[in-house]
Image (cartoon, rainbow, N blue to C red; front, side):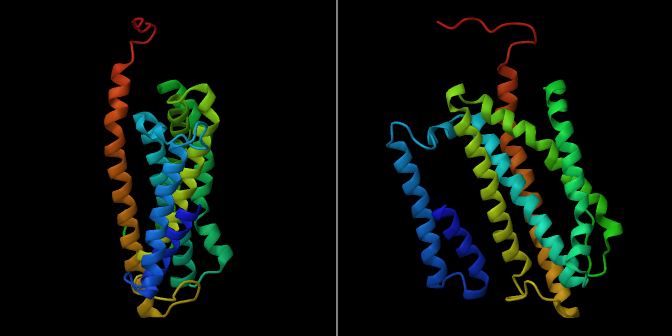
Length: 256
């Protein structure tokens, strides 16, 4: 938690204080150091809190990578589209929440169906004036996509470990999701407010609205690129894993 907190602090403060400021560089280095220290400490324990060697298993690694990037984009979208509706369009917090509720509704519906599907089958540019009517379906697709990811990620992570490590694997996956959320808010916020230091939480004038939207475009492009890259990275080991399985109904030959 020290490592994640320090790194998030460095990313958030970098846009206001400068990326070479000691108040940014020191927490960044300390955060990386804390992460390395945690890994080394866990590797030296007979009964570690987190068995970091699990990440050497491709299936476990890709499940956690997917969780990290999916929730990075998911929470970032909720936070900064809420800010868009309030700071750019002047809506109330309640109206902004209702405007993005399609994400949550679709997420809940898709998450309920996700497990059944897994069991059975194994852009529009914004402007300062773009209303919810033009983009609500994007929110619904986002929520549905995230909802469908939940069960496969959990199933992959737990299937990659022994039963005795199931609790650890589940906890690591949940922590990875939360880390993705932390950096989704921090990194995407640095892009959204890149040209609006101190602009969070207050209504914007006409000129600053356009700067906010430009920053939001950049944040969404990064989210999309990260998700596509993750899909490409994790597809190869999953395809190999599927190809290595015996045909349905057949048992694997015994090993020597």
